[in-house]
Length: 233
Image (cartoon, rainbow, N blue to C red; front, side):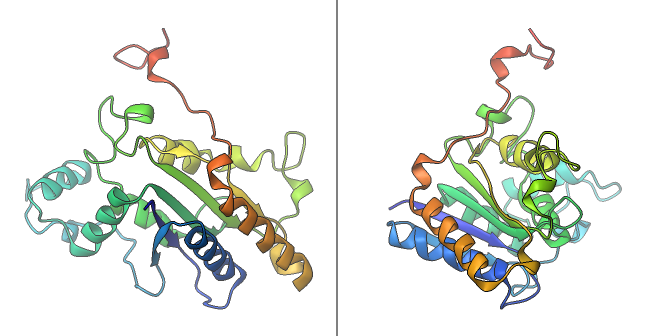
């Protein structure tokens, strides 16, 4: 059975974003996926990186976070809440991030989850990025809501392409560590539309999730086009 891990961030349990999370979970389960969920608010996940993430330090006089991540994972001395999330991602064939877009980005708690959980050495390192990253062979989907209208985003629109705005996440995070990144789902203008429109959004999301195997994949850089120092060939 294929496994999916859903990471969800929103402060209101009855929010539309919570409904999106539930829609993804139910649709995947009905399609035969085994699902697990991390609710960052409910679990009170700590988004702040610090030396307390490591129970045994490689160096005690100076913190190099990426190196300490490698050491702590190898020696099984990383903080338990980080280890739990890493194991969930390693076990999952699909990662789904569900969140509201804040300031053209992810909420702070989800950014902290990325910083603490996507470990150097396990998820990426050296030339082990993109198609050689630690999550190669797995897929990732972003499901996000926002207050802006759809016409405000696009090639000639005032803000530009939303996928370009979220490149730091789609490519710089998920693609970078090796995920095949599916075309994201965006729910526009959510706080200002009526219930019938929101219900239509959830139906579209359900249909997408039920047919996730046919969802297009965002093109990522190929290491074959770059030399050992990542210069273009």
